[in-house]
Length: 240
Ligand code: PXP
Image 1 (tube, rainbow, N blue to C red):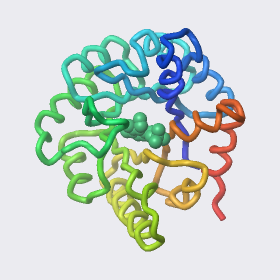
Image 2: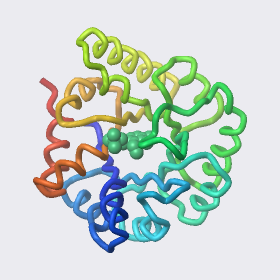
Image 3: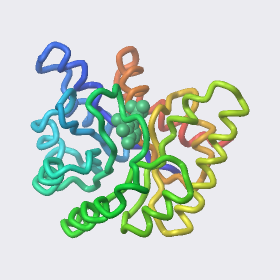
């Protein structure tokens, strides 16, 4: 059974829209855990547009499952991670002007720099995954530079509109996760997954964990966080 980590960034987006105290992503995270989530993910962005440092510190104290910090490979974020010590870090690329993370890390160009970040974080006892596009050569590089695992970008699959295109993206994902598994990497996947497109990708047995945020937070507006998380867990585990 694949695990689900719930990304609560967009609960913070709503709070920050009014610079208010509610809704609180920490409270949302605890409800998500109560509903069966296996972990909580937050992305602390350089511009602090949603998650704040205070959220991260409280989550580290209160999350009972596992806390995954998504962060850009920068010195500022490295020192935050070494202070807070989440269970896991997922290194992601970050641009100020993007609405959300747009693509995987450029491991081809920045492999050596990433190797340094990975080593420092791992020395501190933090598991390190790299968020990557589904490309075999990139998977191999992640293995070579010492990552514990990969999170494969499911955005191109989620955004594919034509059947043929979607199937081609699924095949790319499948080939990559088989390779990653063979190399002994932990295999996660995420981005753009929702209640409609999760089933097909959840059939790929090698994927150990899904990181899902926007669609769960969106459904929680109508159904509540607990129901939204339960619905997603049920779909992840539907294998027909
Ligand atoms: N994985 C990574 C690396 C991400 O950057 C995000 C978005 O913050 C997600 C997963 C979750 O994506 P979504 O919010 O589209 O479910």
